[in-house]
Figure 1 (cartoon, rainbow, N blue to C red):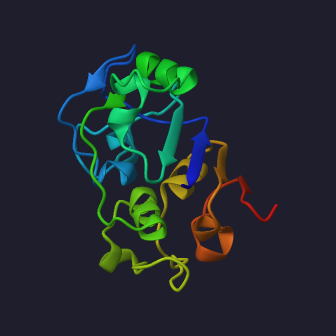
Figure 2: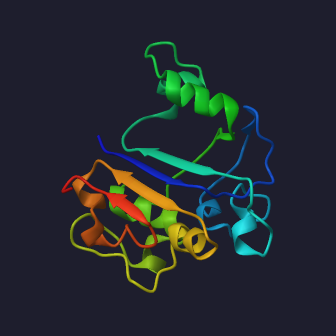
Amino acid sequence: AAAAVFAGACGGSSEPAGGNAAPGADTGRAAAGSEAGSSAGALSGDAPLAGYNLLLITLDTLRADHLGAYGYAGVETPNIDRLGAEGVRFERVTTTVPVTLPAHASIMTGLNPFAHGVRNNGSFVLRDDAVTLAEVLRDRGYATGGFIGAVVLEAQFGIAQGFDDFNGMAQ
């Protein structure tokens, strides 16, 4: 299993905080802020982001219904549970592709694999001209960091674009 944490002193939200889930939210393009009403929707316009933070945690090959935040009692995940209770938690999230690097490229760009060009692990690189969420946030003055635990998400594959601090497995 692979894990990645992408963090920044940033984030825009039209969603309520305080443990409110966003039922039925389809976040397939929300990462790049192109859907109206998405938690990242403010990123596509000129809406202010001051006062908001964004923490994106991805866990590869983990079903949400096996986390305490989603009602599972078979494992203890107190930190993730607390983040889910105090922040915005999405009930329904789908992936554009069930492969780690292309899925993360889609999360970070809001584009489908054929649009951003990454269609498999290890043999594709996210193009420099693909604008990532980290680049948008960085360009608006926010500090960004990416901390990954999967070889296929290493900087050499382009996923580190826009991060002030990026720590992969090779560091």
